[in-house]
Image 1 (cartoon, rainbow, N blue to C red):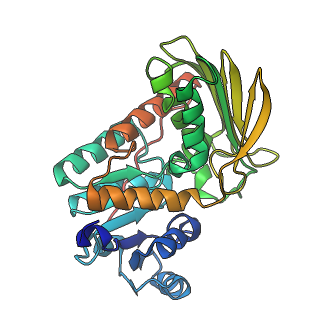
Image 2: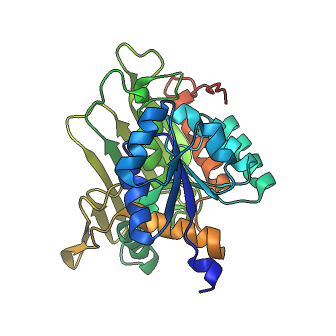
Length: 340
């Protein structure tokens, strides 16, 4: 590897989000990248966050952070409605961007993010971290090997107990909803099966339920899909479920495979394979999917190593999300207007 390839990424953090502790800070420590700055709406909160997590300094605002010449990567874990605007702003400032999913509030805004990435010539990646873990890689290997036969059906469920009513994930103006926060994983996992299904899936139907007290916000949503090769799919999500469940089952003509937690495989790294030869359980390791993701992102930035997640993929996912909302009787999420 060249010296440039060994240089640590210089990362700026938008917001003082709790998720960042496991999604970016711990992986950066594990892989030797720098946490240069953090910005939050409350500067004192950002200062406390920086001291707790070893971030080098505090920026006065989001705008100052994305403009900082000492930062080459911006990580965006803000509320969903703030992903699109600040992704565009960071790309316009010439930064590489690792954005929490979804990349924007709707497909139109995701297209704006793609245009900004094209103009900047920098790396944009949506943080579907599950895709880099050996659990998901093994699911794909089993399809590619032919052990499961031809793909016939896949079902994914991503569900969690309800966040508090004040959580931004229940806010329509901040692009909240179960599909945005959770169902994007189910839909994305199905989209990633296109190589073994004759192409990308199309939406057949969708239905959902509105959150009491949050007009226009989906508490749950189920989508039925169909692949060009004839396989079918079910992508389900629920943000007020009795327990955490993030499972996927892939059935073929010769067998099936289940991953009990494909989204957070560090919590359950099992892959259960059932064929005519019997049942076996493989364990693929509890190293964090976020750490695998940061390694892949750094390799893309420093060495140009391809990744399956880019601005085109983000637009495709958001287009499918919008279609699901419309089919289930909801409007796509609105844009969020932000100042600097």
